[in-house]
Image (tube, rainbow, N blue to C red; front, side, top):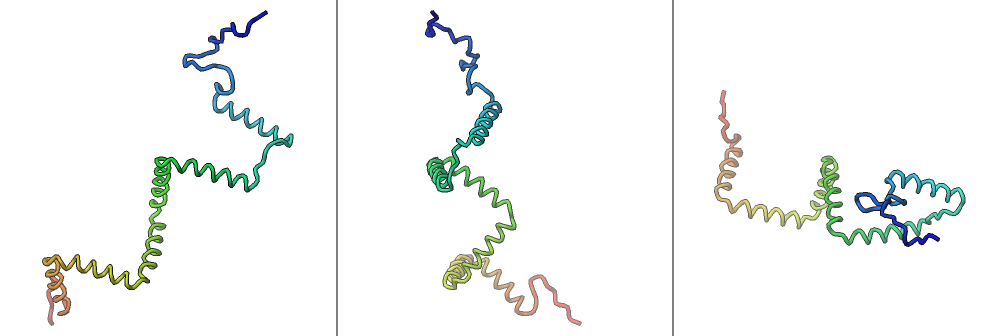
Length: 151
């Protein structure tokens, strides 16, 4: 009688220490081929499980919750999405226009922005002096560097 515990299976191991037998030792392509055959057979036989919309929704929700706990992974996903969207300049311009239109309807908000901008600019006396000189030239029908020609 052969004792199965005395059988040496070390000859089945490769250099990596993994067994050269079984499903896990097969290439990914071979595993897919076998799994696909099994799936087709189960469907043909009528024993394959088919998810309802509610079951699929619940499974997706659970998977999303699990993945969303990994903040680094979510950060990478968000960055890739942002890069993909922002590379479409027309789309980004449309978003900016919509946002600007929405904000500009709030007159008090726009007035506040204008005041802040004016205060920031007006504290630069040299800049304000330059604007004044240019404005004076414009009000007299010219602009800086313009030589008026008379007939």
